[in-house]
Image 1: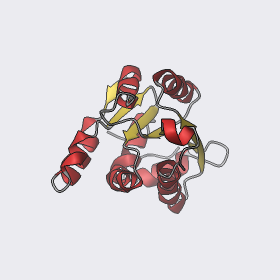
Image 2: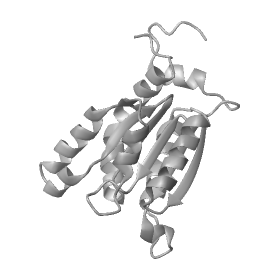
Image 3: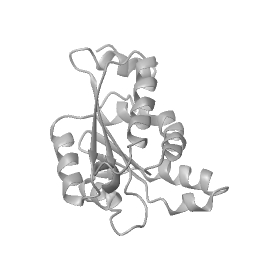
Length: 184
C-alpha cells in the first residue's frame, strides 16, 4: 500500500478492501417477537440499507450478512465472538438496548470489548434526547473487540436513521484506525 500521508480515510479503505478481501459487516437484529415471527423486522433491513448505501457509494467492496436473534445473551455472545474470530470488520446490532428485563445487548457487547467508544453514543442520546427525553433511556454502546468494531443501537427504524446519521460521520476513521491504516 502506498504512503497514507495526505490521503483520506475513504481512499485508504477503498484501497485496503478489495473484491477478494471485502469490508465484512454483520447486522444483527435482537428481538424476541420478530425472531418468533410475531412481526416483521424493520430495523435490521433499514440498518443494512444505510451500510450498503454509504459504503457502496464510496466504491468500497462490501460483504454484508444479516441475522435475526431473540433477546438472548448467550446467543448474542456466540455471534459476536464468531464475528470477531472470523475477521468481520463491523458489527451493528439493533435492539436490546432499553431497560426491559430481556434487554441485554450492552452488557454482552461490553463484556467482550477490548475498548469502548462512548462519545458517539453519548452525542446521539444528547442530540435527540433534548427534544425526546425517552431517547436518553437508550443504553446504546460502541466498542472494539480485537479488530472488529461493534455499534449496538436501539431497535426502532427511526432510531436506526438517527444513530446511523451520526455514526457514519466517523466510521471511516474508526475503521482505518482499528485496521492500522491510519497515520496517527
